[in-house]
Length: 243
Image 1 (cartoon, rainbow, N blue to C red):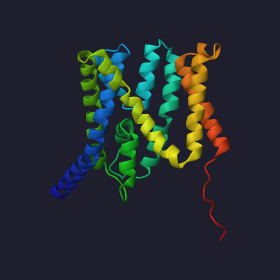
Image 2: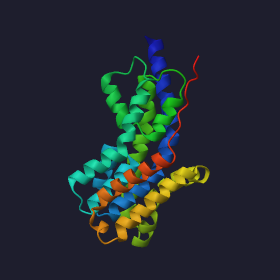
Image 3: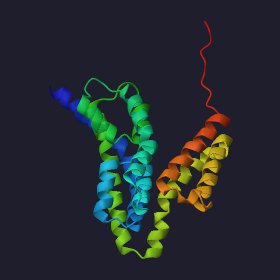
Image 4: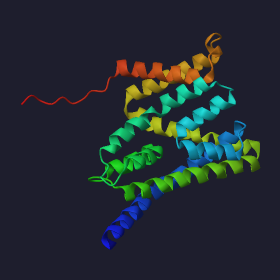
């Protein structure tokens, strides 16, 4: 019995250690989100509740934009499904590595905090991952994301408007930092990003298109740009050679 408890404690601590770098990384991004939320007219408590019940940077940024623009619930639902669909795919993939100690309720809790970074760390572990390890892994990122949000939201209420406006751009800079390195080495990715930019400008400045609500324009731009990318440069899969 003691050996089992010791093993669980060891796995939990290892999860905490692996999750701390994610936690520190989330602090700065969540800080920027908190400032952006205040800039969109939300309160610090509202910003914190959004982070504690969502844990999705891109989805949250899109969400507060729709809220600020007075968008409909339909816009919100469609945008969140489109932006966050990848998490469902990552959860299905990660579930193949779960050990027998992970129960059904554990799967729901883990999926709730299964971010890109958590998925990457857990997937890279050799063999199966157990319940104690996964809980240790997801706690630091969740705490870091929540603390970063409230700190940013409070700073948004204290700092001058010019400073909060500048810091609010940081969360968008994160997405740019994700795309640019890949676009430098992969031309189709650059074409896809450029197509999305041009479409976004069209929905912003062309008289008829600029009547489309902001939330739906984001979805339309993403779908069209992705479609162009899929046609121009489809991802090739390795085919098994005939034996």
